[in-house]
Image (tube, rainbow, N blue to C red; front, side, top):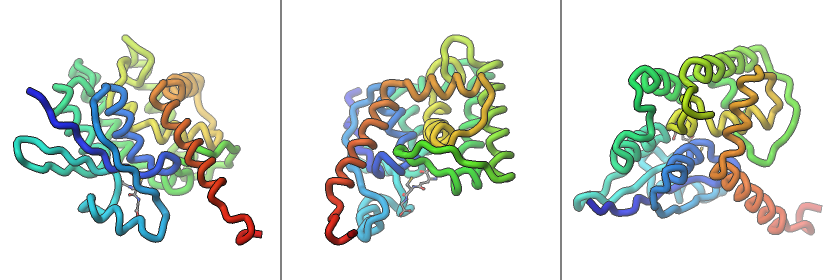
Length: 227
Ligand SMILES: N[C@@H](CCC(=O)N[C@@H](CS)C(=O)NCC(=O)O)C(=O)O
């Protein structure tokens, strides 16, 4: 069956951690799509997002299918939709035990780690050394354990979390960028996984685009006004 291209409405590269997850899945599996990028933190951001997203958040995926307009919001739900609509389940590990662990981790990453997400948000331009608070330290220890256990128990057949690239790697991508940017202390196993993900060509492409966004921002600064 010929599928219409879905339309991804995403936030800008530097800050939109949830958009990165979906964007990475679409690009990794070479699914054709169209994209509308909305700049976050502008006076008209909410107004623009409201044109597309019922939750007033990004990303949202819009897909014309069988004469219906289907809208999916929330990054994990969008990944699931892409997996069932375009990939016949290939975006999760095929082995039931691996898939169960990958799904559990994906949901855990989505629902938990509140301190980490709030205080160490994804910022693609940043490279620093940050001292972790007690709560963040605890969450980093759990992230480290997740990566260590998954790579050890389920990582055969490839260098991603469950071996082959899957949705769980998309869910981890913004967290990996943040762990690297703020200089988190991690086990050798986790550092190896982080390097694998950061050298994924699509993730490198996202980071390159974030760099271009920064250059554009700098070019547009009115220095007379800021002086
Ligand atoms: N749980 C949601 C979170 C979405 C979210 O926080 N989106 C942010 C960008 S990463 C957003 O839309 N911010 C704009 C705003 O709140 O005005 C998901 O995973 O999609």
